[in-house]
Amino acid sequence: MSIFTFMGASVMRLDDTYSFQVINKTVKMVIPALIQSDGGDSTEVSRSVEETVVKITGVFVDALPHVPEHRRLPVLVQLVDTLGAGRFLWVLLVLLFDQYVTKTALAAAYGEKDAILEADTEFWISVCCEFSVQHQIQSLMNILQYLINLPEEKEETVPKAAFDKSESREEMLQVFNVDTHSSKQLRHFKFLSVSFMSQLLASSHFIRKVICSLNVFVTVILCFLKELCFKLIKRA
View 1 (tube, one colour):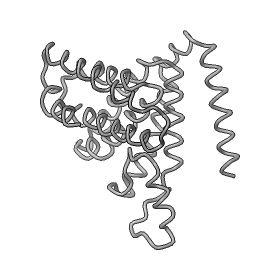
View 2: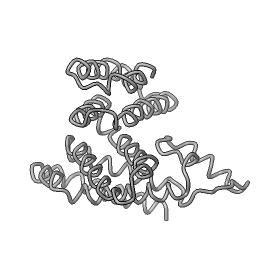
View 3: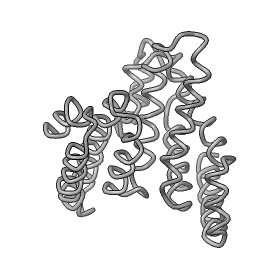
């Protein structure tokens, strides 16, 4: 983790070809070794790898405002491509939404919020559309599942009756930490996540990718609907 923390505080902020190459080489060399350590035989090992990936991705997201604008997209695409878009693109998106809710929206002047959100949303869509339709749909499914598992409202005081809920929350991957956010931020995060999904699916970038791979898209949608129906029946 320390090497990525160092990169986020220094190398990622530099606008030169050498620094960009250092970032790419570090990501390509370190992350594959990390992912390969997850053999899938142990739930504990899998969760440990996922938590480490969240921390690494968080370093990149935190450093993003200081990264030269034309470097931001290739840096994140390289990161997610190395991590595996099918498994971790959704984590990047959740952390980007979290950053907007907790930092960007608060720092922006009242009249600038709409313009900043529009620009950020366009950037998030650009990141997503660097990957296949299948990976994008899978990421939206993962985000939906994550939102379902979040509490409807944050309990400011945790009564004894809510202990079981707190325990189940601890079993979730902590990407958006409910305990460190206000109720308003939790609601904003949920709204932003769902709004982004609709904007991604309606975007010209996404539609063009769908047209180019229509058969794959239909298959993915059918799988998505089947899984969604199963989850709804299970929750009923």
